Length: 612
Image (cartoon, helix red, strand yellow):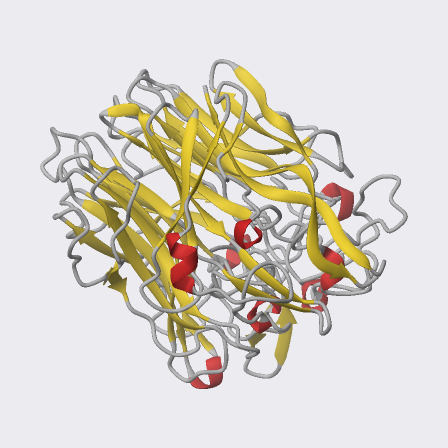
């Protein structure tokens, strides 16, 4: 998946380079530090760094392995879920003792809260230390537990075609007795500039998540969607949910949403609306996709192409099903010009659409919240992406949507942003993004770009929305929230949170409950000292603000990508299942650190789980 990249807005009179959260294109699903993840804008200003990573063998310069070998690989892990468990087995086979898992998602069996399935972007690296080339195959990893998260099977979901997958979206289908895993599939690497295919597929498991079928094609892309292809179509950031409410008239229906990025001539951006496909037979067959993001002439005013008022410059759709079968879909949209503090700022707005007939027809999109995540609102990383002040991680403002199980009309959305506009922004400053070293802060967002978690609530089925309410600790940076409801209507959420005011070297993933405060989960995560996705791979001009504290080379080893979201699911017994990307195990990689002449070391990205 995931998230957001430097892009170019082509104006009638000039080409203006801009980057950031609200300006991007599709994610490649591969190594992804520079992968696109937000709505809008056509061409890449910087080359997507992950796209020249070839497909190769295990974690050193020798040997070969195939996609089939990787998909067959299985191992196991165990731990105490009342503390935190590393679901990834970290076996030395295929270099898994240093390779990352990130972008975690989780689902719980509605009939058995001890039966859990999670997914990740699961990396298999090879390094050519004579040339500095990084080579990768990135399938979708799965983790399955039948004992409440104490032990886990760690494996890979098959890929139908291509050599890259990811953006996992697991779901249980209680009526049809299946477990589903949606994923992206694409073809990239081989030394080229571009990523092609851009498909969305769904794999099915009939044994609870132990073995998986060859995926079913749901959404078919074509052409180099990340690249200069004419008329390419690239599906990105899919999400999957199932109506598991026996009283619903659509019990057993699976809903899959995704963004369709469409290119014009030479890869020029056309639009990126949200589409839906559904399945009533446990994911075996799917309907033709239909566009659901709709029109709103008051709030979708900027138009790259197409009819006025169409809300078609979108990303990060998440569907959720109410107990009565009502379906809600939330997505980010970048077309509300009235909310931009400077021209072409592209702040996101959270839009929500609703269906009362199983996805056949949809309401017009309603704005739930106006975010402060525009091109002028945040500092940038060395790869040209908006980041959290004090770090280099790729940041997105998106969270998710959840429905109260006791009230189908109560809907909540959580998100992360700075809350107020950057007072230092001036017209045109965003045209200089990402700025220059060592600050990478062209609009002076700097220390004032504190980001926190907020919630908005609708009590009338998404027709109107209340004011945003900040939740959590306002003194530190917080990002990547995910939420759910307990059976009594209490909202719970989890997110990444710095351990100190910026600049901080570590963070914790934390669990927040509406009536119980914040609990840190697991160990400190060392985001500024990463064994993979480290900043010094991409530039010799390291960021000044990033740590770790006391390092002789501050900024060099800062992580630039640890996913674009985390996960949370609530069981039928009100157990809370939380997954996130951890960086708490110091390891050695076979990759040569060309600054030191030794192999590179740092903290590995692990698939972490906790149950509360």
